[in-house]
Image 1: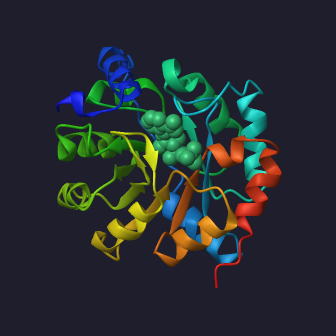
Image 2 (image 1 turned 90 degrees about the vertical axis):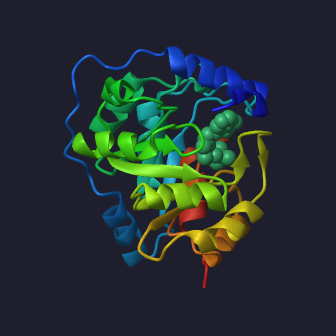
Image 3 (image 1 turned 135 degrees about the horizontal axis):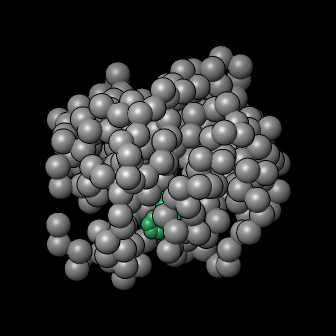
Length: 252
Ligand SMILES: O=C(O)c1ccccc1NCC(=O)[C@H](O)[C@H](O)COP(=O)(O)O
C-alpha cells in the first residue's frame, strides 16, 4: 500500500496502527448477530442504526469526555440497533477498555472500529463485529478468515466499486460503503448511491459517514442501505434525542 496518496491525518493513523501491539491471548467471541439486530429494528419500525461512540476524530473540533458507557446507554435508549466503538487511541480518543465496558453494559451488537492491519491486532479486545478496511488490508481473505476463526462477524469497509469487488471476492457478507474519502477526508453521500449497485443482494449493506439529517437517512435507505453507521451527528449534543430523531425517520 502506498500511503502517500492519503491525507496527512490518514498517514499518521496508519503509521501508528502499524506500530500498535496486538493482544496477548487469542480472542474467542460468541457474537450477538448484527444482521438479526438489523432485522429486529426493521420489524418494530426503527431505522436500523449503528450509533458510534466517537469521542473525537481528525475532522472533529474538541473532544467529548462524558462517560462512554453512559453515552452508549443513551444510544440504545434512543433506538440504536447496534453500536460502534472507536478503539483507536491517538486520533479518535478511543480505547479497547472502553469497548469492553460498553459491551458489558448493553445487549446490542458492538462493532470494534479501528484500523486493524494484521492478525495479532484482532486479539486486542472481544467485540461482536470487527471492521476491516479493504483499502488498508493487504491480505483481506486471510484476515477475514482469521477474524471469523475467532468468532467475530466482519464488516468490510469499502469506498469504490473495485473495493466492493475485492470484499465480495474475499467472502464478505457485511459490507460498508464509506461516504468519507480517506484520501482527502471529503464526504459525499453520492458515493453510497454510486457504489451500492455493485453489492450483491444477499450481503448486509451499511452506509457509513456523513449522515446527519433525516433527509440523509431517507436518501441512504432509498439507495439500498440495510443500516446506517452514524457518529458525529449523534455525538454532537443530546445523544439520546439525536439517535431517536434518526431511528424514527419515515422512509416510505
Ligand atoms: O471521522 C473522521 O474524521 C475520520 C477521519 C479519518 C479516518 C476515519 C474517520 N472516521 C471513521 C469513520 O468511519 C466514521 O467515524 C464513521 O463512519 C462515522 O462517520 P460520521 O457519522 O461522519 O461521524
